[in-house]
Amino acid sequence: MLDRMLGWALIALLLFAAPVRAQSVPPAEGPITCSSPVSVADSAKSLLQRYGEEAVIDKELFTGVEDITYEGVVLLPRSPEWRIEIGFADETMQRVSRLTLIDAKTSHWNVAGVTLGATLAEVQKINGRPFLMREFFTDGGGFVVDWKGGALDRPLPGGCGISVRFGKGREDGAPAGDRISSRNPQARKWAPVVEQIVVYFPDK
Image (cartoon, rainbow, N blue to C red; front, side, top):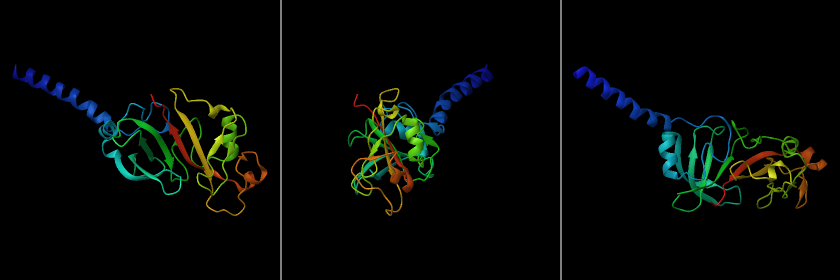
């Protein structure tokens, strides 16, 4: 009788512990979607609980525009190629508003097939048509401002959207103009790559 009670107690302990271990497992490599590895319903608290030591709060995450920073959560902070930065709708950090891939030459993640380090030609192929970017080395320079009705212009399944920023370490040879086409010969020769990807989540 005692052995049976101990057996049931052990099973109950294992069933209780299993979800806790599963919650601390890092997200899988591959595509980022509107629901994975985070969703609009996530809060800072839920992410810290789910990913354990693989999630940390950072008070000075970089937006990519001038010196503007924000407080958010970083998943997998120890490796730039795995790192995902998460912003929230307000200071209470109750609802995810965006996630960002930045500060790495390459990434194990992709959004709709776009990843850090991708070229103009590669992203244009994914989009299905040329797109327009802001002039480089200005406030918000290099961000795509018009996907021209291509595949990346449409919301991803689940309603979130993608924003992409191109850049290069040096300014020499950068094309001029406020709306630069991805098929611009000078832009192609200068060869910028994707330096930042932002996924924006819907308000509701």
